[in-house]
Structures are given as structure tokens and as C-alpha cells.
Amino acid sequence: MFEQAFKNIDDVLRKEAGCASELDYTEQSSWLLFLKYLDALEHSKAMEAELEGKKYAWLLDAPYRWETWAAPKGKDGKIDHNAAMTGDDLRDFVNQTLFPYLHRFKEKAANSKTLEYKIGEIFGEIKNRIQSGYNLRDIIDHIDELRFGSQVEKHELSHLYEAKIKNMGNAGRNGGEYYTPRPLIRAMVQVVNPKIGETIYDGACGSAGFLCEAFDYLRSGRSFSSSNSVRPDETTSHSTRLSKDASQVAGYEPVEGLNGAQAGLTTRDLKTLQESTFYGIEKKSLAYVIAIMNMILHGIEAPNIAHTNTLGVNLNDVQDKDRFDIVLANPPFGGKERKEVQQNFPIKTGETAFLFLQHFIKFLKAGGRGAIVIKNTFLSNTDNASVSLRKHLLESCNLHTVLDCPGGTFQGAGVKTVVLFFEKGAPTRKVWYYQLDPGRNMGKTNPLNDTDLAEFIALQKTFADSPKSWSVEAASIDPATFDLSVKNPDGGEAVVHRSPQDIMHEIAALDAESAEVLGNIRALL
Image (cartoon, rainbow, N blue to C red; front, side, top):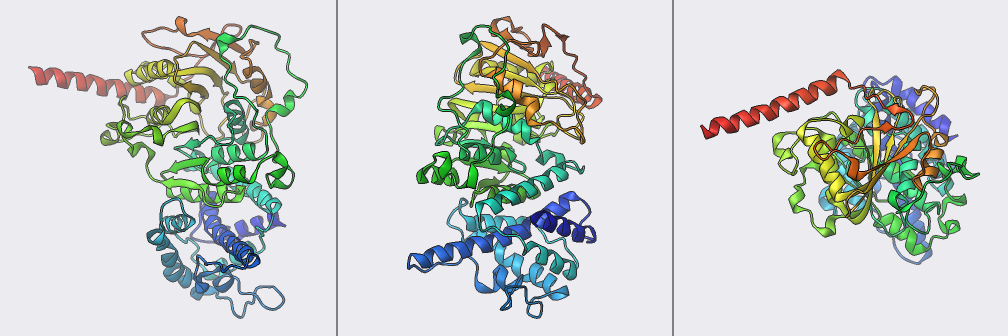
């Protein structure tokens, strides 16, 4: 039923002049889903309060509740279309009355972590693009069919919403920035292996896929009892035989019922997961709204997602209290930051991904664990910023694993990527590489799946050698370039095909450095 409702909503949005792509469909579905969810949440809390003999203080005043303006019901429990607004009246109420009212919640909120603040933030950033009040009426009718009453219903809705995000990521424009293949995220989460009580951070959270998958992992009880902190130089070579359940290693299913109790989680554990485990920052308005909605559908009522520019933080101001146990992220690459933003970082560069990597290292606690997606050219670029950043990473962190991802991992993106796994606080002694090769050309019809990553996850536990994996001693890394290129001793050196854009970026960076040097020389003359 839910799947059909989502299809019906998209069918109406395709007829709407104000919505031109999957990005618009997801955006408009999101604010309506949020208000429907908020109505279900408030009714649930009101019922709980009544059972305890207490009075519930509603967040929304009566005229602005879903049951009043969107879906007034008759005695039969169905929408009373004689009482429900439609056409211009509905559109004008939403644009001129509802949105301004909801935006004011930001000013009234006690702090940025409250649900009230999130309401105000969302409706201060997003706009109603549905120009026809009749189309809006149809969409509301379909949204009203959705139910958030049980965890099973939320679970089904979260899967449907994830599918919308995936479609949006494949739709072009900048949608791909918001979508990282979930099998890759799940593999990263399993290698990092978070525990209840640890804090998890994504400063470029997009649609919050990393935070949602980490939440599912912890709630499912998949977290191992001890941290996967074995270092490459503490192991001996052994057979590459995989365990009999290797095909299941890459995937994890939420516990039956999704209530947490069957995973051995206490009420305190669930409260910790809800309130003080997951933290994110997102700069773009659309992604911020989607991240909030995605986390809500996964079961987190008031997500700790901030809407700001992560790179605006001066790293000199970071204190121990600001740091996290785990960082999971796929920061945007190829962008350029202004000179004033670059001043926040010890290694000056316009490349956003390199600034994010510095940010993530700084925001990790001593002993903290990170897993970051980055372009594979980072491993070998010869510009000063790349060399300095690799040196910083190797000296301040134990870069224990590099996962080399094949082309096509990110659909619609013509770049190859690697995943860096590291622990902060001790220098690198040995790097274990794994060359992911699913044995097929990947694309929209053959996307990355959990089985593709099963061998990587199994071998990574002990940093085993295999035809696809090998280790490199840190002492053998060139101290002049700190080159970390993927060079499989069994398969020959991997060829890094650099795009013309990458080459032009490096030329521009070298030109800028040369100009700066010449400027300094002229100043001395």
C-alpha cells in the first residue's frame, strides 16, 4: 500500500509545473511527510500522557495540525472533502500562513537540538513548489494514507524513502552529492564497528545515509563485543579462506520488530541512540531537509543535524569537548572554497574534499576511528597540498586500510574513489590495501551490492594477503612524496586514469603556488 502511495504522489508531482526533477519530487514529498509524521508523533505523545494521567503540551496550535488543515476527518474516518481546503485556498494557506507559522518555531526553540528548532529550520529553508492547489490536495490525500504507528510501518517507509533518495542521486544536477551506495556505507560501518555510547559524526551528511546505516547497525545488535583494532603488523599471513558465512558478513538486518529490545538493548541504550550518538552537518537546504526526514523515518525523533557550512569552523578553535569517537563520511570533491574559508585550515587548498579530511582528523578523539571516501587521485597527486595532507594523515593517524573502489561504484560519477580507514593518535606502521573487483561492469543495472563487499570485510578483520589484498610498510613509503598509490604486487601497478578536469585543477593549483612564490619574491625586492 505504501509503495503505491509513493508512486501516486510522484505521478501527481510530474504534472506540477513547479517540479521539474526527482530532486523536486523528493523535496516536496519530504515536507509533507514531515508534517504527517509530526502529527502522528504528537498524537502518540498525547495518548501516552493521557494514560499517565498527564496533560500533553502540543507543539502545534490546533489550526496548524495536519488533522485540521490537511486532512479533516468525517465520522467514517475518511477525509471530509467538504471541510478540507483545496485549490487556491489551500495553496495560499500553505504559503502565506502555515510556512511562516512553522518558521517562527526556530525563534521560540530553547536550543538547536530540539524538535521545535528543527521545525523552524526546515520551514525557513524549504519552499512549497506545488503551484496548483488541486495537485496539492491530491498529494495530501495520498500522504494521509501513510501510517507511522508502528516500527514496522516506519521501516517500510524508510526503505521507500531511501529508494527516492537513490533515484534523486541518479537524476543529475547535484543529486549525486546526496547519495552514497548503501552497500559501501554498510561495509564502512562494519569495519569501523561502532559501539553503544560512542559518538558518530558526519560533517558532510547529505541525506544522512551514514548516520542512518550506523543507527540500523547498532539497533540491530550487530556491533561486536570488541573493537576491530588489530593492526596489520600484529598479524601473520594466513590462508585467504573465507568463513562459511562470508556472504552474510556485508549485510545486516534490523532486529525483528525493530523495537531494540530483542537486540539486547536496554531503555538507556535506546535513549542514548536517540539523543546523544549521531551528529551531522549539512550546508545545502534540500539535503538538510532530506537528512532530517530520512533519520526520522529510520527511527530518530529529533536528529542532531545542523544546517551550516562545516568548513567555516576554524580548526584552531576545536577543543576536546567538540570531538567524536567515529567519523563516517563521503565529503564532496571537486568544489572550490574561498580564501577566507581556507584560512581555517593549516594546509591551504581550495579542494573541498581535502579541507574536509583535515576537519575530520581534527574532530576525531584520540583513539577515534574514521572511514572517509575520497578521490583515488588523492593518493598520488603531486601538488603541495596533497603531499602535505598525506604526510599529516600518516603521521597523526594509523592509516590501516585503503579500499580501492572500481569505476561505476558511484553511478553517474566519472571518478574513481578509495575509502581511507584510520585511527587517530599513533602514526601509520603498515597500510593494508584491498582492490575491490566485482568481476563485472557496474552501472544503474548492475550496482554495487553487499555480496561484492563480503570478501573485503572478511579479509580486513585480520589484514590477510590475497590476490586482491596486500600490505605496505610505512617505512617503505617515499618520505618526499608520501605517495600512497594502489600498486598490487600480484596484479601490477594500478593505472590511475586522471580526468582532464583533475589535471586542470592540479595545473591551476601549481600556477597559484608559483604566483604566490613570485609575489613573495617581488615583495622582498
